[in-house]
Length: 182
Image (cartoon, rainbow, N blue to C red; front, side, top):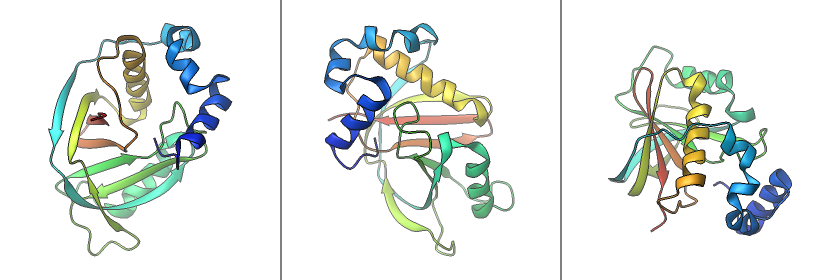
């Protein structure tokens, strides 16, 4: 989830929740009871294998995945509306775990040789659990909250610590791919 090693993650987790990740795993319903009580787990999901692809991306640090900062990054890439055939968001740090001032977000497109400051990166190439966010992007954190609530209460699978990828399918439809542990 964007940490250099398990120790960094454990330290950040303990600071945020005042309990170690191992203890939280054992007592997840108690540790996260406030979080669980405030959400909705009525999400549909599917397990999918996504072939690997190469994209051109640029990362920023956004405070709590601040939409104006992310919007400015996309305006830099797409000054006109939707000029690329496919667009993706690469989520390096999970907003419900990471310090809100250190959320790394990458904007990615399929072709970007001419984009200044962009680097090539491979994404996908594994199995994912896919949820879909419907509605304005401003409300996407609620979909993430619902996913984590679902995962905490009805866990059917183990997640991997690789990047979460948002696929911007059409206006107000975002597919969110959480990597599965293999």
